[in-house]
Image (cartoon, rainbow, N blue to C red; front, side, top):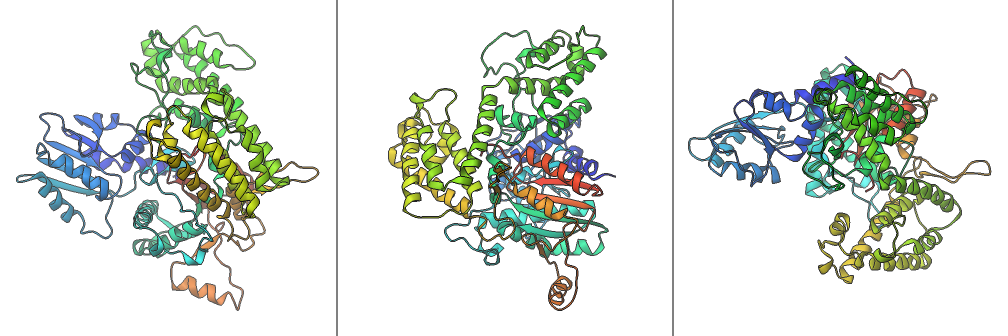
Length: 634
């Protein structure tokens, strides 16, 4: 069976314990579990299995009246916030029978100890069952991309001033929360690889990825698995922070990336958006925030036509994807005998809207093609959205910055940006907001790389800081990002001092972003300065890594480090100093798994897919596991 189909099946199989116990029970789940289910099948599967209700798990969550049996789904282990939420529900006293579906606790006492804890929280007479889930909760976004929503907050730490070299960082040097996240990630990957029957070789690009890869290589259950597994694979971990330009930049011509960036997020989700469905109703309103009609979304796991169209959005250029949307709509309308008038030539959002209107008064047609209509509406709303034109402006400006970076030092670049920082009352719709400027600064410092420090840079940064502080303080109501950065939820308590402290912290982080590749030899730059015949360009780190893996000359990778898993590998490394021994290479095996630690963008997924297909057509599958979900803007 092909790996994509197998992973799709695994994403559903992870829900079998909950589905088998859902009958006549209320099901409560944490946000990462809900996000995984959203892409893997939807809450309808739990309701079809007999669940009385499906709701969010929190300490304040109320079990429906008269329901004494609950199924609690936790994406990880029963620790921290998850334990607090479960305890809060059980101590309300209504629940008499509790089923907990959670990840395995490698260092805990197992299911029996957890069951005793649950019974204690329920009180006398309570009955508890703990089911330790096998595969992790995956969100299959597409054939090339799976997410681990439980690890959405996992991001490699920045190095700090004079940051530590790769050899200086181990798991023990990380903060407690980060250590727990690494152990959770390693446990999830081992569970996944066990089901897939993989015997993997682990590789790392970046300091934090080295820690993760080393933990997976030495993890006792993983070592035991590799002794008997038969399917060989290469797993390469890559630090997102080595190339933040790839996360915040506006690259290529990808419709899925624009949709995910432009439309508002679906409440409680990081990887899906709200699609305004008013156009399919008789309700007439110009209020974009109208909450009378439930929003549509991109995840349509049970609709083959919608899934095929979403793959087109992910993998085709925008013009081709728009034409594919028209084709799907025309075919759907024809099957429903709707009076569609096919037109040739350029496809416009208005034309697609007129096709969509044909379905509005036909309830059967709406029901049959609801998933497809949601995706086409998402596309139409994105193409009409004012932020889409701003996207194109960003792309043009980033290309201009690439030329400037090649010819100028950082102080000169910052001085050119300074006049563009405008306060709220000075800005037009085409000007950059404070949030936009933070995106641009991350892009610039990431692309620029190691900067020559000195008085000139300090002075240029100070001027930018002052302008940003003024612009932030002049906001009538700070948007969510600025609220998070400043710690102020209202302009009333946002002082100049708080804004200054926040902006100072931002620039410390920007300096760290600039020096994050300083220890690398081969992948120390993501900027191509250009020449007399070629313009300067952005050179994605991920592209460099994949090109190195697929290099037909197969040189020993310099910055792609192999993590040995035992004495045999250490002996090989030692003997290779004195005799010809082939070191493990990430291109050795037919299955390549790339794990971007900190998130990956849709355009990066497409870029790597196209690269591998061109450079190494014999590779069985190319799968990208992304712990942090889709990364947009910031």
